[in-house]
Length: 182
Image (cartoon, rainbow, N blue to C red; front, side):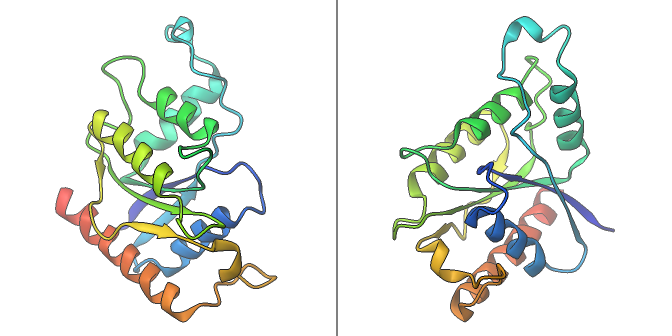
């Protein structure tokens, strides 16, 4: 039986290094995991005034997440936190109150950065929101990928064997995490 994984990339830029990382993670996943990239850039800002008559973008986003067995987040760090579009997506998915798409959902977080820190702040801010929303972020291994731009060739292929091995293990662990929570 296939596992349907929604992938949310925190960067809105089509050619972002974190998007390359997300595509690499999907490619390194164990057999039986199917991935759907779910965009966040077109989501109107969350406003509780629209809970009774939500914008169609909110409904489509919530439906995509509801159908997913798990969610993989791949994001850069902006100012020691998550990008605004990702925070908005968390908020949109958490409402209306009592109907959160995140409740009980297995998740994994990978953050990447051009610096050596690898998006540590974004990873932990996102984890904090997910725990509050009763999602189930994978504990270990944690994935903070530093010097991200240096890891890909001009075609977007991962070139570092050690990073490839780590990311393969990360995805195998995520697969096992989903099984454990099912």
